[in-house]
Image (cartoon, rainbow, N blue to C red; front, side, top):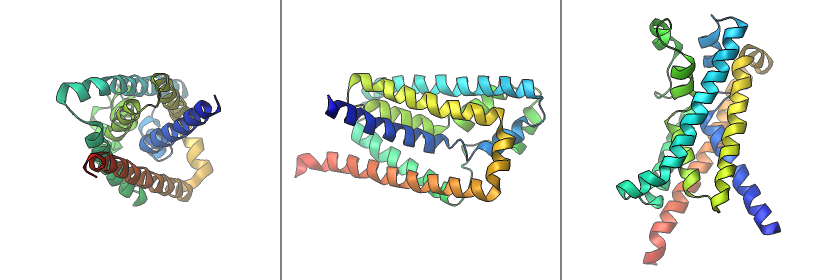
Length: 215
């Protein structure tokens, strides 16, 4: 029983850290605030709710389809781990350099479409919150759950991180005032460092699994 609790606790911490780092709620807070600054407090709350739910449903769907995609295209877990590690490594380097990836949509690029598009769904829900990195992460996590019921641990991790995103969207300007520009950059770089370590571990695990039958 103790081993089970220890195993699930470790997987929960790993899942929470991975999802938190890939979604990077503190790092994207400035964009979220800029995108919603023209709206009233009530509208911002509605955008926060809809954007967070859109990202949550999107990531849940991809985490479930991860198994189907593996079987349909004959993709091995080892190949996906190595690919995911490479993707995470690239994102981690960008975060260390305090850069926003090209998969993110800047406020300037979306300014012309604000009037005709529901920004809560796009670009906030997808791809700002549920971007390619986060989608890859949940697919990887759901495919390597220690037990079948460990999938609930992945869902819980998603829920907790997106709950934080929701509160940031509601009170983003306050978060930035508290942390300041320097604080935001420091946190972003720290999460980038954590992501690089996770990326290297994914590549090591995938490579060992591939080479083990040959040894």
